[in-house]
Image (cartoon, rainbow, N blue to C red; front, side, top):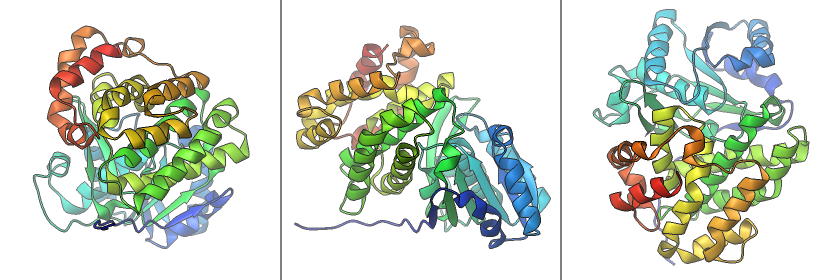
Length: 378
């Protein structure tokens, strides 16, 4: 066997129940005034108040930027970067789901290096970019954003949803406390845990998977297969929530290296156009995309199927649908407000922004097949 690959994932992760007590002291290591990037939910759950008290005890000043919403916007990133520069903060604390964590990366990149956020998304500028020190605190167990340098942002003018990835954006410290996940409402748990499973499956199926990423991807799949339904049934089931949280964090490091494939590529136009929950779009698409893709890597699809309770590659889609049924996530695009009239736009937008993921799919997908899949899952 010839090994030839590269990776860069120097994540500093503190994992375990009660670790949220370390947020203030961890932030204090990186500066005297922190820019807090979050959404409204951290105030509702009491986490923001707890953390502000810790920062005051550490004599760290702070500015709270709580304007991040589901599927973070490029305009929010631009506003945050401008405010960060005005306030003279020297570090960033991101708290919440994947949206605040992703937005914080965009804010850091833009505030530190200038230009526009689209310059980084579309790689119009090149260089050795820098970042403010970021401390990441996830409160959902899906995106894995705390363990990589990836951020996905939506331009509200064009409705283009696309990611950027830079090693400098990997958090200096990530505090992953499964207790924080227990504040998720039920309607959030299903989408985020399925997103984590998709990260595990896609990073394993990616032709760019390698001996570094595969153990993270396969272990994450096994954890999610064991604990995902239990966590959806009872968000206070400690063993299950710990398991899905660990899986989400592990696989975030894996897909930063291996990349993701067609399901994520085809989902981004959905949440870009309709601002739906990312995990619900993945639930609508993934089984059908896999059924179109099995011939590209039958042995790997067979492994995925067996992990989820199937027999071989031929029932991979069925095994995923059965899992989705158990967590009340059987989704069609029409459930999310889409119609056949949307298919041409979705197809063209996917082809424009996500062709690399279509090409990376075990069986590369052409434009006609992408159009067909959108219609099949309508």
